[in-house]
Image (cartoon, rainbow, N blue to C red):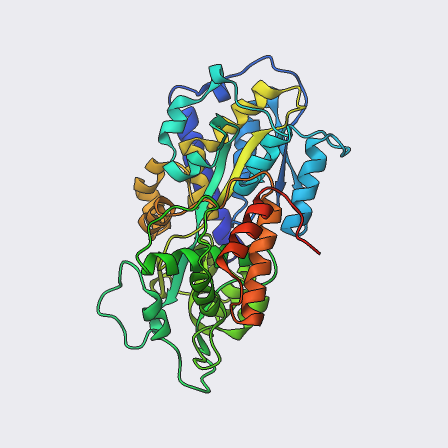
Length: 437
């Protein structure tokens, strides 16, 4: 299925299923008519990553069933840093539009909670049944310092994609997971253009580089048999860092393993290379599956049967976005009702079935319609189950920047950093201290 007609068909089917789920039986409290304050609830969100306009479909359903508490999405564009800064301005009431709900990256919950930008969920209104329905890792991402601040709009975890037709030799059965050794073994012969490399990730200078670096570090540590937890969420062993950095970028003596273009890739560029058979494997998010099989700007698609999706060789980074009430909102109760609706299983089902997002509710993955729409639903659930959160710190942007700085230094200097230096630099960054000049 491809093109706009295909997306509309998915959207109509998914919206119909969700409407039936919320209207066919006892109506949830979030959808019962009320005499709430008139005016639109405003959700500030980055541009939707998924296909089919699934998030807007849910807002349309909310508005249809609750005309006295209509809502709309206020989109912010730009880079992750630009969106982050815009969210802070909305939270502070510095924008012409007054926000009620922020759709925050999971890494932003600690910061926005610590500095009073979002409201703690009242203990007496805790949606306990919904919390029990959430997968463990997405649920944990909504808490900070033991208090509930948000609910998931969608979750995510890094996964590995492979082009089945490019694997040489063809494995008799698809492995539950590929190892890094398996990936290296798929390096193409010298001079090959299709494929030209075994693997590509996202190494442009943004959060994607931090994510890829953390996943490489965790995998190397796991391969070495280390199970020790780290207060900073990552090892400070220089040998592990050096091995991980070499794995990210490849080594001059072993060409063909990592696509050198990865240095400038983000998710879209990696997907494009995979689409055109220039790489055998790619690290990406599950939403890329729908993009590959349904549509692209070039109207090129991949047969679903030619895509293999497995967990990464090691733990993937937990991604996703969480919905939180702005501290200054005068409509906190209405906002929480809307958030509960969007995080509930029927809504999560539509987000996954239509948009390709990873659902935060466990039961969604056992639905027949989800498994029909997404053959790797079980894989995604397992990737989420074994994922890890990035460090919960109010100064996460500073911490992420330091991760990338260390990676660049090791790449340039051949691993001269010491364990004590690594530990101190990451600790300082986690506390928001500026790097020495």
